[in-house]
Every structure is written in C-alpha cells, then in structure tokens.
Length: 161
Image (cartoon, rainbow, N blue to C red; front, side):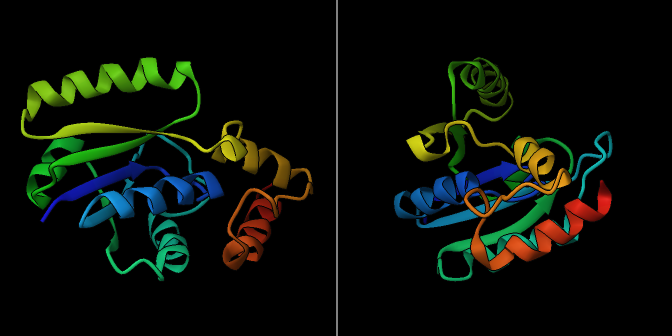
C-alpha cells in the first residue's frame, strides 16, 4: 500500500488545501492529512478543531485519514510507513522553501519522496492567512473555503477580530 502524508497547519483549511488532498487521493492508496502541532504559532483554531474541519471536508474520500503530529515530519512519515510527502506549490517562492525541506527530509529518511503538486489556477493566490485576514474584516470568504465548514470558519474568525 502506497501511503502519502499531506502535512500542514490548515488554519483554516481552504479550497486550495482540499484541491491538493483530492488530487493526492487519486495518486496514492492512502493519504494521511497531518495537522502540524506547532506550539510556536498562535493559531485561530485548535488542533482538534482543525482535525474536525478536515474530517468534515474529506469525509467522502474513502482513502483519506486525518491525524495530527508534532516533532519531525520524517519521524511521523516513518511511523506511518509513508513513501511520500505531498506538498502543494503556489509559486516559485513556495518551491524554494519546500525544496530545502525535501532535501533535509531525504537526508533524515531516504525512503520518503517529496511529491509536488502545482496548485490549480483557481487557488494560486489562496492561503489560510489571506482567508483569515478577509474574514476578520467581514469580507466574503465563500469562494475560498469549503461550503460545509464556511459558517464555522466565519464565526471563529470574526469573533477573533
């Protein structure tokens, strides 16, 4: 079974994230969407909330599992028996950082490959940060987040502003 890890903060999950997850689910037998527990960041949603939102939007994908991890991604990948880490790329600037990380990961865990999926044109400009900023000012984010979780995201982000 070919297992891939799709890691990220997903704070909050966007249609761009879902696009990458959906496409990865067609390439691998199993995709684990792994929410990073990063204590140095101040997220808008708790890890448990992000897991819940991701489970809601991926419930129709039979081969997608949602989990969380802390520590090194390669240790988590090794623990799960993953053969690949899937990363979405929006721009060249994303590639520079992701390329460096993939080289480090390869040195630490040679058995894992990094697979880059170019973000669909519709989502090249989209990030969780942009969604948070728009929502905090009362803007319409309905074209940026899955409809099934739109209300939850708006309520949280408008309450935090």
